Image (cartoon, rainbow, N blue to C red; front, side, top):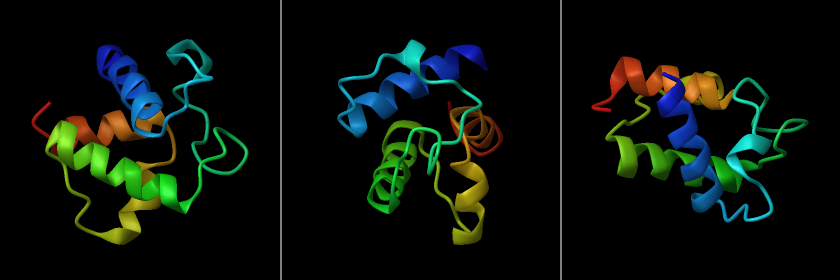
Length: 85
């Protein structure tokens, strides 16, 4: 799980062009939206693309998105439960 979390941090930095951050700067349990990383709805779309393209995971129910994208750890848990990674 920790390896997947580290991989996700790198992918998020690349996908969202967060060059000012390093993987070490991202707390795996911190909120991604709002007070945490401060991501917005456009970033959410980018994260959906990241999950589909890099991990073969689709979020079937839009209501699940809020929980899936709560933190890097929750993304990793969703990938583990639903993906090919």
